Amino acid sequence: MKEQGSQVATGAAQAGKHVIQTAAGQGGQVVREAGRTARSLLDQAQTELKDQAGMQQKRAAEGLRMLGDQLRSMAEQCGQPGMATDLVGDASGRIHRAADWLEHREPGQVLEELRGFARQHPGTFLLGAAMAGALVGRLTRNLGQADGRAGPPPAGGQPQPAPPATAATPPPAGSIMPPPPPPAPGERI
Image (tube, rainbow, N blue to C red; front, top):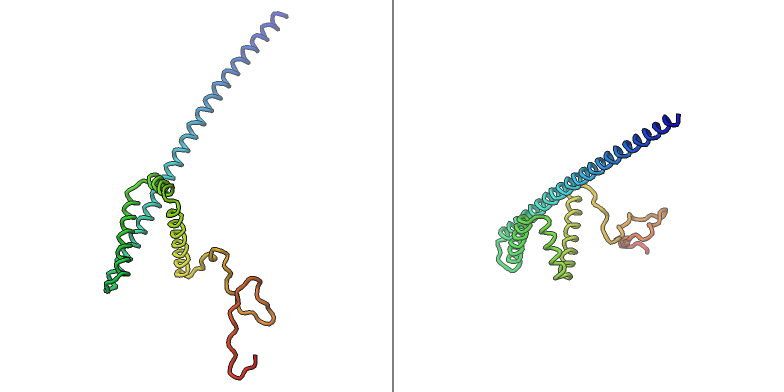
């Protein structure tokens, strides 16, 4: 009986070792497969981001080119030589060059060149970014109004003009009230 118990214990120990070895091997395989899957997903995400950035960059270059064409057309249609016409023509040429520059670079190159410029000329970079932001905001708002849609509320917390108040409804707090109409001739104030 002792011998059978010893054989059962030995068999159980060997089976346990085998189970542990199998589990360790399969666990390692699962870890390797998870690593490969994670790398594949990361590569896929990077490729998609790069493609999207390239498409946005192309759209920006096309938008710049259209703006340059409009400015050139405006300068040509003016018909009157002068400083303003020259400035608009010069701006058109600069915008076309910027579109060409943007079109012939990879998104990573554009980012690195902008970072370099920002390091060398921080004030100019911030001024340009502020002007670009204001221009994009104005264009967005104007395009929204042209489509008949209400654009986003103006930035900076500017209060909107309130509808005229009546005796029953006081104006909302912080609203801008238009001046009252002038009194009619002979009307008492």
